[in-house]
Length: 361
Image (cartoon, rainbow, N blue to C red):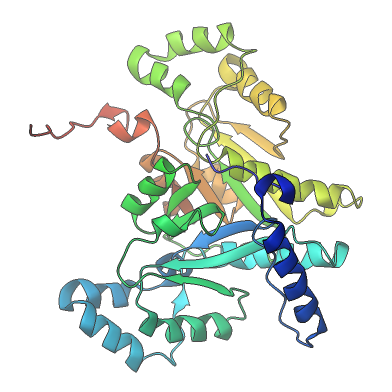
């Protein structure tokens, strides 16, 4: 899983880079500009978003699939002065920018900020339209990675990525296999008014924040065995899941606000939205979070009830879940959802085992 970034330059052997950064920082500080300086990647919480998650590129994608890359690039060049419409990750990115503004007010010299990177396999020729669109909406995105048709996954670690959001499920799976928190984003079916002042992030528990060890028992042995297992191992922390490290960095930033007596006015709020039952299997979850030293602002145990109505009330900027039927239910009721393709749940559809294709020898 993606880890918190080290703060000890001696341990990482980058004293030369540190000197270069100090010189660059001094240079930037002496320049007069209203554009916020990008934080140093070593300390930043880096969110990599694909162009198709940040912007709605359905029409452009259709041209690419039907007419090929040359027609696609030509279309983008022809329309490069027309801003692209916002996509699924757009409100999330705006909320990240708001958190940065608040952090800069409280900690003017801090590098512990969100750093948004546009990670796309688009060709560089398309970059002008992307830049124009970013500037049109006033987004603070200074780092780009445009790989010209090649997969950008190999660059995620080089950019020190904490979270990768894409529309391509195969790339997301590849990122998770590389130990990077990642999810496939889906646009909601109906528009929802989201908070302008507080970033709201909702997580499922098993196979998202935690491993799928307990979910395996549910799928293979049923609920009664699962309840017995969770009771027996109540005091044994669950192993971490693919999104645990993202919750960890959110908590790290939250504590910076708490340190300034801003707990009640914190611009980050986290939610656990789980199908688990509280009395039968909830204690292990809460004790696991405690053992990790992590807080969750709100914990909602639904005991198998649909998540959509609760999410409709929360109105998160993003909701992470490993089960597609929860993603679909959330989308239907106006929630921006992100699928985490991890664990045994990927072999099931609405509780039924999906037949796996037989591998040829």
